[in-house]
Image (cartoon, rainbow, N blue to C red; front, side, top):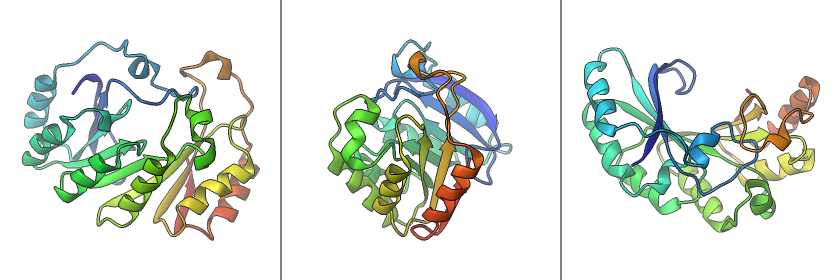
Length: 227
C-alpha cells in the first residue's frame, strides 16, 4: 500500500474518537474539486508503512483509532493486510471510500477489519462519470451503498456540494439512492487547494440554501447535517 501522507492526531475525522490519519496514494476518480491533488496525480512523497506502524505501537494509550483515506484506499489489494496489522494493535479503524470496489468493502466488513465507513457519493448515479472525470460502473456504487447500509458497521454517506456540478434536484436524486440511511452529510466546497484550478472562486450555495437542502433531505435519511 502506497502512503502519501500521515497526520499524527485529529479530533474531527473519526466521530467522537481521537485518531491519526493515513493517506493512500492513487485514485480511480479525477474529481476537479479534490483537495488532495498530490495523491490523485501521485506526486506525493511516499511514507514507509513501517514508520507508521512504529508510531502506532508507541501511541496505543493516546489514540482510539486510525482513519485510512486517500486517494482511494480500496484500490490497494493489500489494504486488508494493513488493516489487520492495525486492528491487532487494538485500534478502531475508519475507512473513507468512493465505493467503487464493493467486493473489497464487503470483505473488510466480513473480516471485521473496519469499525466505521464514510462513503462519498459524488452525484446522482446517471451523472457520475461526468462529475468525477472518469468512466464509472454505476452499479458498483449502488452495490456499495447496499452493502454498507445492510452491515452492522457504523457508517455515513457524504457529498461535497459544488454548485456548478450539483443542482438542487441532483442533491435530492442522491438522497433517494440512500433512503433510510443513518447519516448523511452535506459538505461545503472549499477551494483552498484543489485538483483543477478552473474551479477556484466558483460560487457556492449560501447558508440559507444549505438549510433548505437539509430540510428537504431529512424525510429521506435519519440524520442530515451540514459540514
